Image (cartoon, rainbow, N blue to C red; front, side):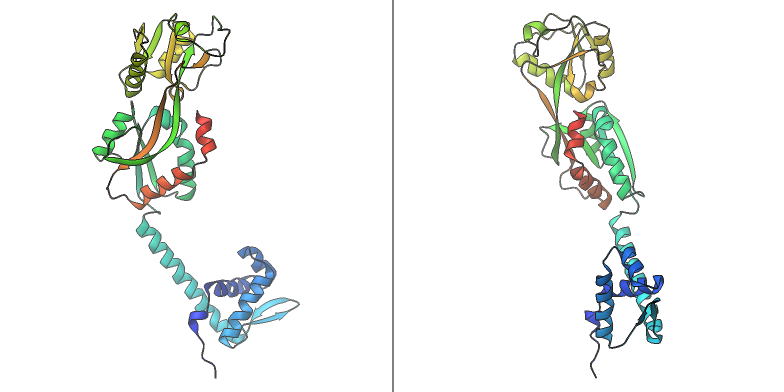
Length: 304
């Protein structure tokens, strides 16, 4: 008498058996498992061959368990329930059914990048809490990482060796001009820009990067107005008080009336995702980082 080799029994065969028994026929079981009817039939036939017994009566009115099938099905359900319990324990240990992710960022990221990423993340891991800690610029986000107040930070390149991460997008600095007078050109020159009073949002890392860029190009940096908020800067330009230079994401949403140009010599801030190097991260944090990697690049490019 042939002995049963239980190691050759497959979970897919047990699922097929349980599902056919629940639905009473092969076709509905196949639809439920998203398999072909022939695949279901083959799975059960090979299981019966391995066990050496007939588990189902087949007929015009469907499929029904044989007496031995009635006894086997209880064990099959138990095996599948145990498998589900094993997967649940593993997911709990990985932290994907609980926990939290703390994200430090600045307004441009919070407005234009994070919503799509968080929406995708919540679809996959609805029980993981996501909190956003906004800072005036990326230096604040970096400090939040150092202080342990955030798990993930959005910062800018170049960064220190204490962080590791990757570039997520490049944000161009743009010139925003009042609605009138209209420039009859596709490009603005330094000479044209110098005719406008300059409105700058000061006191942050973006301002420092821009100021150094202008100094290096011998462009006179003597702002007529210095304000704190990017939105204030754009609002003043809209009222014809002067021209502004700021990153595009910081300027958005731009009023349709204003004129927008690239700088005569381009400047970008490189936005990256960062965590503390050599730090232990929770599975929830790794899951969010994987989600960021998977965010469609078209979504990110649409932001800029």
